[in-house]
Image 1 (cartoon, rainbow, N blue to C red):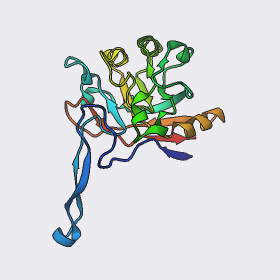
Image 2 (cartoon, helix red, strand yellow; image 1 turned 180 degrees about the vertical axis):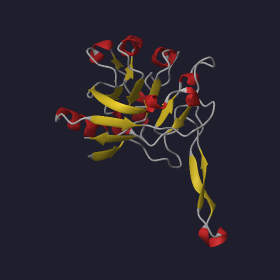
Image 3 (cartoon, rainbow, N blue to C red; image 1 turned 90 degrees about the horizontal axis):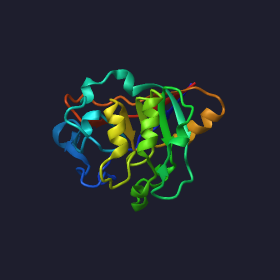
Length: 212
C-alpha cells in the first residue's frame, strides 16, 4: 500500500480565488514567551485544497455537514486531460464510459501553482458536468483553481454538480502519481475529509490517495 498526498500546503500568501480572503499563518503563542507554540490562522473556507458543498452556490442546497461522509472518500478514477492549452474547455467526450466513483480530473495545472498562469486553467463544460451526474458521479476533483473558468460568469459546472448534491474538490496536486498507478492496474481510494464546520459552503481538506 502507498499513500499519496494530494494537498497543497497552507501558508501565508498562497494563491486564492479572486476575491476570496487572503491566507496568513503566523505564531499566536510561542514557547519562549508563553510556554507553548500555537499558530494563528486566517483563511477562507475555499482556501488551498478544499471541497465545495452544494450550499456554495445556492442557499437552498445542502451545506457541508448535511452531506454523507461517503461523498468524501471512496474508490477513484483519474481522467487524464493533460496537454490542453490555457483556458481550454474539457468536453463530455472525455468522460464517456465512466462508472460511478470519485472522478479526479488531471489537467497538469498544479505545476503552475503559485504563478499567474494558475488562473488560466482548463475547466469542465456544463455538458461534461451533466454527463458525470448522469453517470452517477457525486464527487469530482480537479488539480486546478476551479471546475469553472477563472473568473467565471455563472459557474455552470458548479451549478450542475451542486444541483445534484455532488461534492467538488479543487486545488488538488500530485495526480500524475495516481495516473501512473492507474496505468499499472493498481486500485485507488481517495480521502478528502473536510473540517467539521456546521452550515459551511466548504472547507479545506488534507486530501490523500491510498494506492493498492
